[in-house]
Amino acid sequence: MNKKDKNLFFAALILGHGILGAVDGIVFHQLLQWHHMIDSGNIRMEIITDGLFTAAFSAMLIWGGFKIFFDAKNNQLGTSGHLFVGGMFIGGGVFNLIEGIIDHHILQVHRVRPLSENPLLYDLAFLASGLLLAIIGLMIKRRARVASQ
Image (tube, rainbow, N blue to C red; front, side):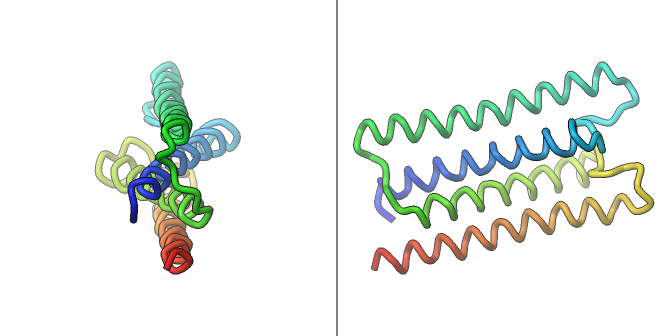
């Protein structure tokens, strides 16, 4: 992969990570209200940690946008749609895997749906969604490699 394609792929990873963070925060934290970033019983702490989480994924989206802008401005940005979309899927999948493994299983700061009859099922489905997104992204990325040969 040349430098321009690496820049495009890295920007897509960053954006995919930020987008899945936004989906998690908006859907699971706000709309469905299944959990907070830290489920503690202290609503003030839960709202603050959700705000920090929102700030983190927002920073990822801003970083990805600036990376694309400056790489394009310096003529250092690839143009493969497959590489870009594949990178976004991989970035989103990695978000679900990292967030699921660290927050749900290692640190146990929250579950996807703690008040359900089987919270582990939701946690495992969240991990499976991350793995599925990453695999789809790798398959799309592979198409970019094939197309460039």
